[in-house]
Image 1 (spheres, rainbow, N blue to C red):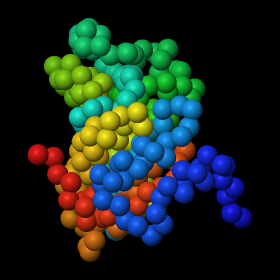
Image 2 (image 1 turned 180 degrees about the horizontal axis):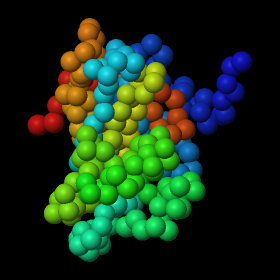
Image 3 (image 1 turned 90 degrees about the vertical axis):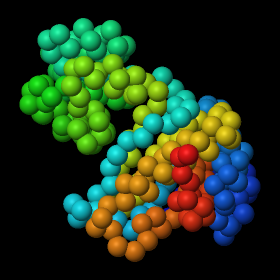
Image 4 (image 1 turned 45 degrees about the vertical axis):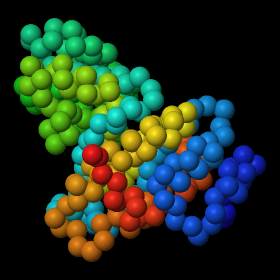
Length: 238
C-alpha cells in the first residue's frame, strides 16, 4: 500500500529532478529549499553501504566532530565516582549519575544526548546497556566515551560542540545528522564534509568492492535528494 503524502511534502518533492544525482553542494542548497515544516528541521545524510553487518570485520562505527555543531544544546550525562564527580561538575556536565538517576534510566528515562563514563564504573553500569545501547547512549571505549577522570573536561567539551556518532545498522545503512535547515549552506557543507571524510576513513578492511553505494540528503519531514557518490565520497577535511 502506497504511503500517502501531504501537500507540503509533494511540493518539496517537485523541486527535485528525478533521476539526477546532485553534486554535494547542489544537494545542500536544494535540501534547504525542501525544509518547509513549521519547525527547524534536522538535515541528515543517509548512506547505503556494501558492508555486511552480519560480519564483525565489516562493522562501521565511530564519531566525528561537526565544525558547526548539530544546532541544538547537547545534554551530557556522566557516569563516574569519587573525585571525578567534582571534575565532571566543573566541566559542565548536565547530569552526573547517582542511584536515583540510574533507577530512572532503568525505568526508561533517557533525556540526554551523550553519556560519558570513567573506566572504574563500567562494571557497575553494564546492566544499563539494554536500556541505553539501542539508543546509542551507552558509553563505549570505541567511540571515545569511556575516558580517564583527567580527560573528562575535554570529552564533555567535545560532546557539547557537536559530536556525532555514526554506525552501520542491520540493513547496511548509515544515518547521521549534519545540522539544521536554518544553517547556512557553507555550514552544512562543512559538517557534511566532516561526516563523509570520517565514514570513508572508517571503511572496514573486510568490505570488498564499492563501500558507499548511494548517498542521500534529507530533512526531518522532507524527501530524499540523491547525491553523486563519487562527489560525496571525495569530500575531505582540509
